[in-house]
Length: 77
Image (tube, rainbow, N blue to C red; front, side, top):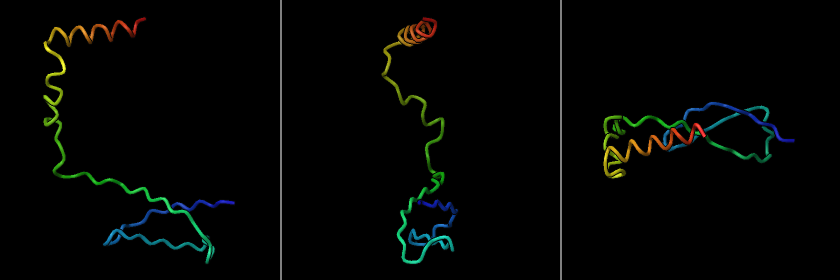
């Protein structure tokens, strides 16, 4: 039988974590999966940094309009 124990822990210096539980049998084996929350990088890209990122994908505004029109038409089919 597999028992699941879910705990929230604080990551210690050096990237170490520690957890204790009376439910864990001494000398037994356990598989540990760590799901760490990603902290927002203060220097990450701003929304405005994304403008122009796809520049050159379409040759003209007419090509963009044509593509959007075809996509909308495909929804109605």
